[in-house]
Length: 245
Image 1 (cartoon, one colour):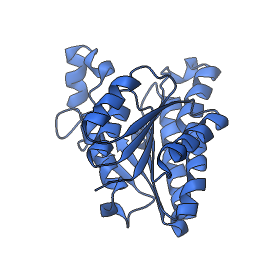
Image 2 (cartoon, one colour; image 1 turned 90 degrees about the vertical axis):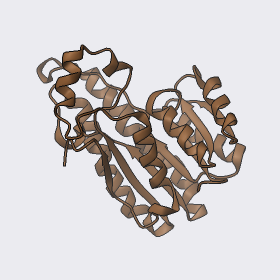
Image 3 (tube, rainbow, N blue to C red; image 1 turned 180 degrees about the horizontal axis):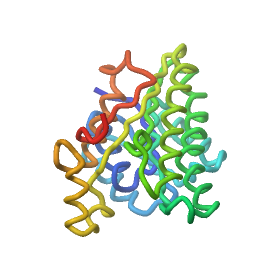
Image 4 (cartoon, rainbow, N blue to C red; image 1 turned 60 degrees about the horizontal axis):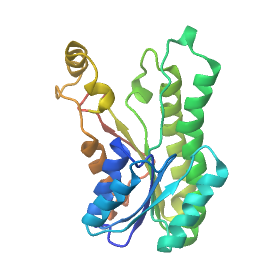
């Protein structure tokens, strides 16, 4: 479905980003895997190759304009174009509102929101010339419903959904779609480390009564990257087991 398409994925070395990279490669896309360090990238590139696709790794910080331009330049240098951008890189710095430090607020908004803006700005310069592109932002269910102790993270993800809609309107005339995927509670190293009672209480909030997987998110990204979603733009696809409707 994505044969010869070129996908840039940020935060690609592990977790959801790695699953997204492999899912896109499985559909034939060539992967430009971006992360702030190259740790874990050799393994990812080997897995991409085993799937019969190609990939390159780029070390870059999504909050630095020069780095975001470099990752797009590297994609064009390696594969000649950029068809798909997945803004997945993100961080958390949780804490109660009255105790949250300025630097924790700034760090989360800078990575999660400004980073997506910078990457989108860089990629859209190539996509507009091609008159084709798929931009997919990884938001969060808590950006829709809020969550105690995550004022910074919730604000960044809510802002990302607003950025998605604005960019969708602006880029549509160039045949570029911009959508977001909003994961719910996803199995991760962090959730696996939680006490069993805490995990049970979290799962009880979900109508499907289970956490999602990284592959659940990756499958949604693949759909939004393919021609099957060509008439969808400016939307937030909730992948949360019914946790927020």
